[in-house]
Length: 240
Image 1 (tube, one colour):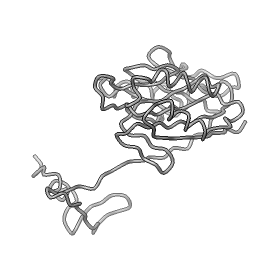
Image 2 (image 1 turned 120 degrees about the horizontal axis):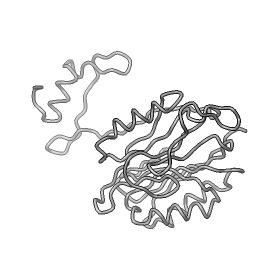
Image 3 (image 1 turned 135 degrees about the horizontal axis):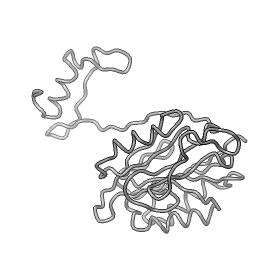
Image 4 (image 1 turned 30 degrees about the vertical axis):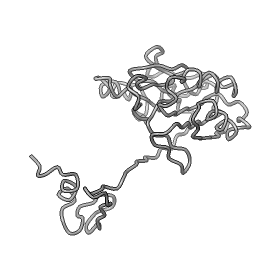
């Protein structure tokens, strides 16, 4: 079985309007779709459970994983500090993934699926940034995977009253959650990052010319050590 995926994203003042806009983009839902990813603005945090239930009912997909965030990306669009939603739905081989959380353990190391694949090969993980033991939890999770490799990110939220949220078939808080894939699922990963130009006290953007570097490592800007330039731009002064 070749996995099939469809994605959608939208920014609307209300969660239902955003969900409907995303549903229009993912329909027709791939035949046999059985897993959905959901990343939503914390503006929808109070209605997160209703949002997940609505997507489950409209798509027929039982399993959903995801997280709240202050920024949501979809395609070439980036929604920062505004109500937004991004979803990805896919059809994967039955038994090739397991949703986990603090309420549901991932497959045991060394266990296999009905097809004979390693049950825990790779994982997409979401974590609570306020949990003091996140580094230890991540290390422990990586040790449970045959590849020792996982991807994902930390949940975020601007609304302190709602706080950070995760989705692992239900809306939860704290610890780690996500989905573990068996070795039957081929995975290709990429790293994405966002940045903003540094502004001076007068509001003008600061620009520099890379004058020395090796591959992706910047050694000098405008003929000066890159770290010194960064400290000046940030007003951090000399290193201790």
